[in-house]
Every structure is written in structure tokens, then in C-alpha cells.
Image 1: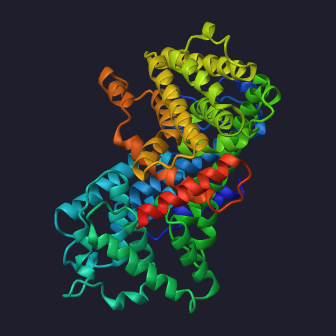
Image 2 (image 1 turned 120 degrees about the vertical axis):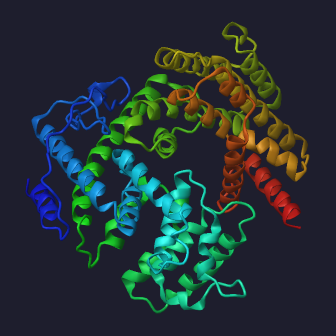
Image 3 (image 1 turned 45 degrees about the vertical axis):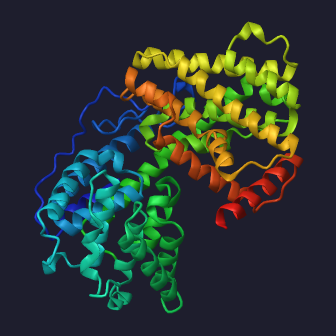
Length: 508
């Protein structure tokens, strides 16, 4: 209770006049579910009942009190965000803070409203020329937040910071905060935006040079920005660094309140993730594949981390649990193709997956029968859940994506077996599919259930660029990472040689 009192005090002692706040949480019929096994829960979350906050049914009185106080803290900060967000710079900083802390899902209406107002600053032309809008930090943060939200903002908003010859002004070298914001903004450049590309190189150079003369705290903040720009990081894993790098010497009107909100939120979400891991581990153990297929990886926590990264919103608990299941089979099937199956067996398995007939697998070896049966049952189960929840049976699309994955794995297996070195474009084209990204994205699409129509499903089945582009990035990143670690199997060594050869051909 003392912590909450401090948060309330911070509101009422603020320099800006803020009227009395009604702290009664609003009821909601929505729940934050940890899939279907509520018996695994120990942390009660159901009293966090604001319309933007959906948590699961639980039991104990002590945790009920925690959730009740958290709901009040959220109401307090939501009110402060509405009031102080009307100030241009303050609103930008508050949105940036809640996004970096990964709690922006509580404040989407407020964020949308503030960014609409911020976009007017760009479109009205008031961001060009007026002294009030000449601050590099303000311009860069506004640019980044709007682009993240889907607004188009031209990169010419940064022209005011350039000399007549087109180079960025050297006087900006003293503005460390502005340079960090400029570097963060440059991460959202698109093809052909030379100004942003130049901004990234310019800010990186000056920030990297500054590390030698900054104090320890400042150097830590700058180094973290260079190593982990927000656009290429996950708030789930970076949020713990926020207050240590941003709150020193700060006594503003809202950061203390936000700290109270974030502290409780972190604890509750961590508890939820722990329960989800328990549920996944229980499912994997009961499936029995770790015992039946000794060669396969047994890493349910690693597989779950992918789901946690893809579906970060705490409200998507059931979807995270369900998504982890196909991810585990991507790894399992990859192990079969990489380290265990013979080429003849892999051909038979691929044909079986493409036919998808459970009664037509007698010609497969026992370990493949076990794998296919489990894959078949898991896919049918997910399809049934999607149909019950969203009214669309995705079985055809899921079957197709599993068939494509096995076909891509088989192509690589044939390359390794024959010693054939494919052309770079052929390797990448096949690697986009063998990355498993398409399998994951297709499952996410149906699990979320948003925008499912005949037309959207047909587009999805053709692997649109939004999927293939992400897959290409992951494929290349994964291969670069694999090239830096020890290689244990013959096929892994072949992959290493293959990738290095292709990389040299591409670079030359």
C-alpha cells in the first residue's frame, strides 16, 4: 500500500493542475487466459479488470489485493497520460517509455489519440522551421513512434539538421540525447531513404566516439542504444534496463508513477509466463516424443521463447501455448532431416506429410510413424480450436505449410547427400521455406483469427512478401550465427561450408 500511496502522491504533487481521479476499476467480461488449464495458475489476476486489461481467474486473497492495487495504478497513469500527453514532447516521451517497458497494451486508446495529434504536427508543417520543433530528440522520436504506428512520415523532417552541402551538422555532436534518438529513428529506414541511411552512420559514429569521454552511466546508456536499438529488440527482454538507464536524477511528474505500474506488471507477467512454461512442459512430457525419439532435441523452454517473442501481449496466453506446439515440431522434423533419417526415409516421410493420410504410413520406419502421428493429431487439434473460436477450419492451409517445410528440408538433404552446391538465389529461395517462418506465421494468423476471409487465406497460401521477407532475414541471420559456433554433425559442417561459399559469391 505504501508504494501505491507514493504513486498517488506523485500525481497530486505534480506542478500541473490535475483534477481528482476516480480510482474505481471498471468491470470487464474479458479474461486473460493461460490456455485451458487454469489449475496451473497460482497468481490471481482476475481483478485487473480495466477494459484494456484482461487477466486470468485465480484464487488467493493476497494476490487479489495486488491485482486490485495494480488496477488502480493503471487508472492513475492512464489519467496522467491523457493530461500530460497533450504536451508534444511529454506525450512522445511517455509513449516511448510505456513501449520500452512492454506495457503499452494497457494504453492503446490513449497512444492512438496522442499520435494522431503528433501526426498533425508533421502534416500541418509546424514541424518545419518553428524553434519549438527544432529539437533533434523531439523530431526523431516523433518520426520513429509514428512510423512504428503505421503513419507515413517523410525523412525530409531531418533536413533542418543538415548543412547546405547535405551533410549533417557537426554541432549535433554535443547533443547525445538527440543523437541516440536519431540513431533509433534510422532503424526504420526503407529502401531509397538516403537521408536516414546517412543519419544512422552519422549518429553511430558520433555516439561510438563519445563513449571514451562519457561517465560510466552515460556510456552505459549510449552503448545499450547502439547494441540494442528499440526497433530491433524485444521489450520483454530489455525492459529491466529502462529505469537503471533512464531514471537517474529524474523527478518528473509521471516516471515515478510508471515505475510503480511497471514493477507490479513485471511480476504478474513473469508469473503468467512461468505458468505457460509449466503447461508446455506438461504437454511435451505427456506427448512422450522425447522418450521415443532419443535423437531429437528436448527443449520446450527454448521453443516457448519463440512464442513469447512473437506474441508479446500478455492477453495472448492461450495463443502462445498453442503456437509453441508447432514450433516444437519444426525443430523435431529438422532433427529428423539433419541428423537421423536416411535419404530414402526422408523421401517417404515428405510424401506422407504431403498426402496427410494417417492410415497410409505403414511403410514408414517406426520413429517416423510416431512423429507423423503426433504431428497429425496436433494439427487437427489446433484446427478444431481455431474453427470453434473463429469459425474457420485452417486444416488445408496448415497441411500445406507442413508439406512445404518438409519439401524444403528434403531439397537441402539431397544437396548435402550429393555434394551439390546450389546457386545463391536457389539456396535462399529454399532457405526461406526451410527457416520454418511460414509455418509459424500461418499458425499465428489463424490463432489470432483477425481478418480471416477466403481472399486473405488464398493470399496466405501463396506465401506473401510480408512472410517471405521476414523468413529471408531470419534465414540469413541464423546461418551467420551458425557459422560462428562449433559444428558437431557432418550435415552441420556441410551447411557451414555451403553458406560460406554462397556468402562469398554474393559479396563478390
